[in-house]
Image (tube, rainbow over all chains, first blue to last red; front, side, top):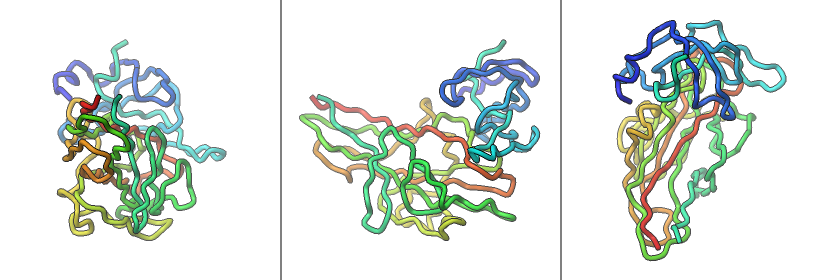
Length: 90
Length: 180
């Protein structure tokens, strides 16, 4: 990834996630974490989604802990890691 | 006609080659392919790290005419949404080593010491994206399941991981095909 791509985003910025969510879902949220892609390539931009999603999580403890759906045993949370090319500013 | 190229998962001592092209395969604490099995899930550790059994995959050319398959690449979507405390590491390997561990608890850690064919120490799989993929050695102009290196990956589960099924990740193979 190009480092310049992440520079255009800031913590607290509202964004729309276009790629990566389950079944092609598009969601909106707020950027909570910006990491150095060289140090943690899988955790570059942490977004707190407006609504919880299946397989969502806590952004490594930044948000309340994800819960497990007792019926499906799938985790549900509001955290989502993404890349600059998978989001757009609102 | 384009070559027919399958993605295989290798399991067992044989090994057994299972076609996993465009389907799900679980990285559980067992040396087996399932699309949704949960009977031997990885135990969330109370301290340290538990591991999936390492997963061995490779390409398999089952039909090719007058051409070559080469320039093989492997990559992820770049974002780790396996969940809190869960990571994935990978490297290529030139030979097969069956995955081992304690079924239902943890696999043996993927290291060059435990896997003699591994090209080097495994690294974060999410560093490899379509724009910066992992190169996989190999080329063939004939039907072959052993023309290229394997990709071996492993899920690592830390103490902060949640119970339950994690998210899925899409792992992509790419190659050039000059067959007619």
